[in-house]
Each structure stands twice: as structure tokens, then as C-alpha cells.
Image (cartoon, rainbow, N blue to C red; front, side, top):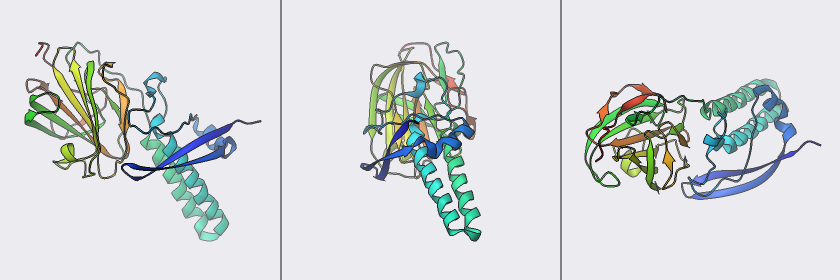
Length: 283
């Protein structure tokens, strides 16, 4: 007898309002598709907090981001329904609906890909890109009051829906501050997105003693932030720590003396591209 896969689907109606629907889907429904793509799934109920997801860093190079399993199953179910409707209607509707269904599944799988990354060896100065995407802004901040408590430089990275959306820790150190802030959904490149949008704000004491803060920022399309860090965690530059779904932005705020090695317009890869170098001296 084949095992039964229990799936819990959560739909976001508003940023803070959720509706849960439990259903049972037999493995046979996805058996052929799973065999073709070589994908295996593990399902569980979505948690209530963005930090309550299990951290996939402990898995050996997962093919897909586990944070996307629920969406993948939902989209696959919708695709199966569309395909079935097309066959039921028949005629010219069959092919277009099948193509739409296949495109939905392919895009969703592509979006939640989670490629292995090899980070450079950290000599105690590395500042790595926390996200794949394009550097859109490097600005001086007169006073960062949330964690650095002083002047800072901010590097902003925009992630399009086609980028890998798995996020990685930019520096090695100890997590001292973790904050989740509900907010608006301005376009990710808006100058006020860093202050007004839904976001996480994570402060880490670098091994040099300096403070660094990084933010996951939701955009007009991204409506779900997930992170796995808590105060007291010891992290290494390049560690996987979360994901923002469907287009977003990442900000990194560093002391003004930090040497920045990228410029606006540069493309970076999370956990591999070097944004700059931290001073070895304690603050």
C-alpha cells in the first residue's frame, strides 16, 4: 500500500490574516511527475512566525527551498485541475490550458530552486552578498538608530522574480538582534521601502566587534518573509538563513569605514560575491 502524503495549505488573504485548509492528497497523483523530475517532498503545517520554519541548512544541498513546498504543491494541484478542465472541455481549449498549467509548475519550481553555494574562506573581514540580484544603491546613512547607533553605509540589492531568493548571512559573528516588522508593500526599489515595507531587521556582532545589520524587505509582489535566525546564534558568512517569496530587496548596513568593492549596477550572487571588507579593529 502506498503511503499517504498529508498536506496543509495556507493562503494569505492579508499580510496578517491567514486561512488554513487541510486536505489529503494521495502520492499517486504526483507519482509520475515526481519520478520524472527527481524531486522528493516533506510537508508540514506552516508556522505562524516567519522564524518558525525549520532551517534547511541542515539538509544536504536541497534541490528546492523547503519554504516553497506548500506553494509548489498548491500550484501543482491547480495545474492538474487546469489540465483536467482542458481535457473535459476538449477541442482547442485542451492545449492552451495544458501549456498554462505546465508553465505555472515550471516557473514555481524555478523560483524555489536552492542551488549549493561555495563561499570564500572568511579571514575575518569578509562582507558577502546576502542575496542574488542587482546592486541598486550604495548610500551613506547619517544615523542608523536601530542597531548600529551611528553613521553607516547601506548597500541595497534588488531581487527580480527570476533570481534565486534564498538569503545568506553576509558576515561571521553572533546574532544580537532579530526583529520582524509588518508594513506596506511599496515597490522594492522605492527609496522608502527600507523604512515602510514589511521586513526583517537582523543585527550581528561581527567577529571584529563591529555591528552589521541586514534586512529582508518585501516588495509589491513579495508577500512572505521567512528567516531562521534568533538572538545568540553564531553564524558564518554565507550561511543560509531564509527566503523572501516572489521579488524583494535586501539591505546591508555596515560601519562607514567598511571598504565597499561593488558599485550600483553590479550583479551579485548570495554567499559567493564579496561586497566589501570589514576593518579588523574592534569598535
